[in-house]
Image (cartoon, rainbow, N blue to C red; front, side, top):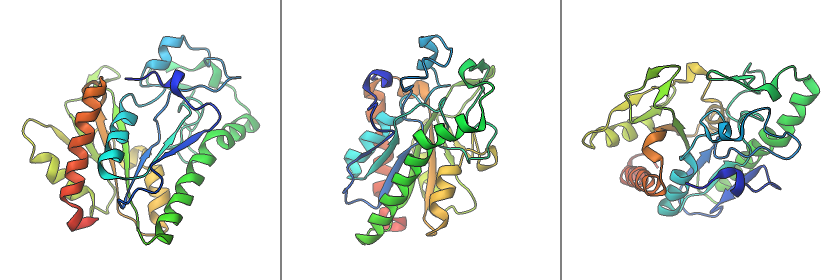
Length: 255
């Protein structure tokens, strides 16, 4: 799996892959990168800490890229670490700029002024969501109403508690997309599928989808993969292929 710090596009806070893909699926990766822009140092953390889940969702981008390739779907990714600002949080969220992530204090995020937080929003959060809004509009203009699929990963152990799920499907009351995705995963042998586990919209993790689906009544689903299952490029490709296949099989029903 690539080191996202080295690979990050430091000039652009957001990247779009396969912008003109023919699939109605629009893939989103809120926590694709652990890149900390110059000027922030390492936020007071040891560099190895930035490889942990506190800084990004390891494996998520590799899965999303494979899905983009197989589905011929556009992909929007944030190129800046969620430790700078979390693109999957509303602007009034207490953890928009986290000073504590899991059990780790983030020294560079303490005692920030309102101006400093506003600057971080302008750096990463605002351009990411503007890119999604523009792409949604362009898909409608091209006659391809999008469905939104957000790709995330989660840790096998959180605050000392083991998580049994291999994958979680997160959804709100609209299950038009989530229900067939869940059914497709449950049909695969040996998978423990969490339904609104390990998170749910009540945990404030559904912001990106909620923000961009509501205006147009779009179908949407959030996919969370346990990150030890996507620890290699081969694993990422396997999960990307599996999820692309499920979405492809249900496209006559929901896409």
